[in-house]
Length: 276
Picture 1 (cartoon, helix red, strand yellow):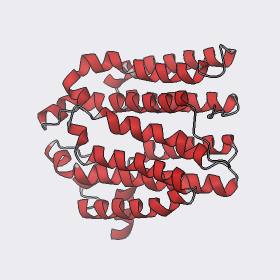
Picture 2 (cartoon, rainbow, N blue to C red; picture 1 turned 180 degrees about the horizontal axis):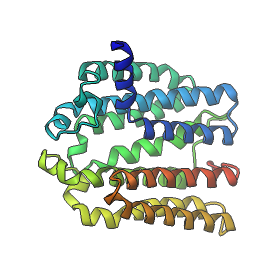
Picture 3 (cartoon, rainbow, N blue to C red; picture 1 turned 60 degrees about the vertical axis):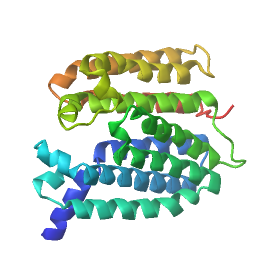
């Protein structure tokens, strides 16, 4: 019973929703760009272990702060799993992520690991600085490069694809922090969104998300009908997420992930042309 309880705690501490969403979306993109079955499995495993390590690291580092804030929704605070177990799981996942990333090629693997390292830097302290947006931009921006550099010929992705992914990361950062700004400030966390304040962040969230969709929609494909449909869908999704935050605090972040899904669908519909 104790082991099952700890496993449930680890599952809840890895930020399962974002972890699964990012892993699936990147794997779909890999398949659409031409990765074979083994290549897709390697992408799935590398991204999954990387995201698991990031989520567990976050909960292990924030255990004390979450306890002080009374975050009973956190498994560590609820006593379902210990902070030590979560920390150890983060390290194990990170160690596994290294060979799994490099299995797609040295350059591709190093790019992915750089993105994972950026996310760990966020968890370990950058989140409380003015540069809190940067790890999200680097981490998300590295993902399309990881996909394309694992293809034959090791092509780099087009600049507009990397920029769009980075913008999605910035939007996800703003949306993720939005509901916690007040408690973060009370705990002394003064990252970029916390310094801006809730009203400014609420107004800013749609900007990077819609800019990312616009880049993917028109950066290479022209004003095709699918591009306009994707942009409208992204706008509607973002607009729905912000007012819903009053009833469900995570709604803006879920909307940001949904916009990422729309963007991946747009790329797949257009042949997943990530390279020039």
